[in-house]
Image 1 (tube, rainbow, N blue to C red):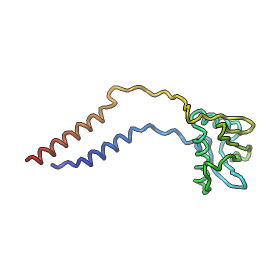
Image 2: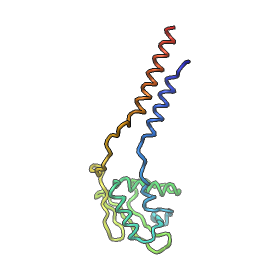
Image 3: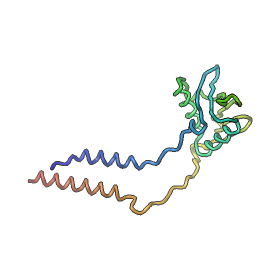
Image 4: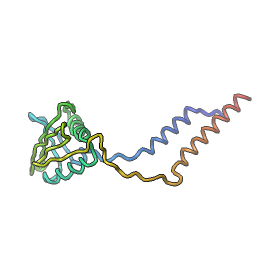
Length: 166
């Protein structure tokens, strides 16, 4: 029986990629952005019912995301709705609640890494001092899958050498 080592390598890569950590919900999802319009300025619509709830979510996002990630999230969301924004030219927006109950201006200051919203200043983390997130330690048996695949690759290689020698 002839084994294809490329297939074993591909299976290994696929198996290892499944161990990637789950991604957190996107920033646009956390802020519950539902729509974007360009009405002379960037207008984002959120389904959050009050500007206070939007501010709370923005502060939560700022604790775990960098300033550039937040700006990118707004730009990417707008572009997904048909805009053609770039991070470089994005410095401000206007946001409203989907129910029309609130509205406020959002100003992004790259030099200070802050976001002004509803008279409040939200400071995002910088790329240099990303917050420390606890990581669980190794668990018993966590490497058994990789060890088994390495053993299968070794057996396949050995059988191939035996077939070539015969």
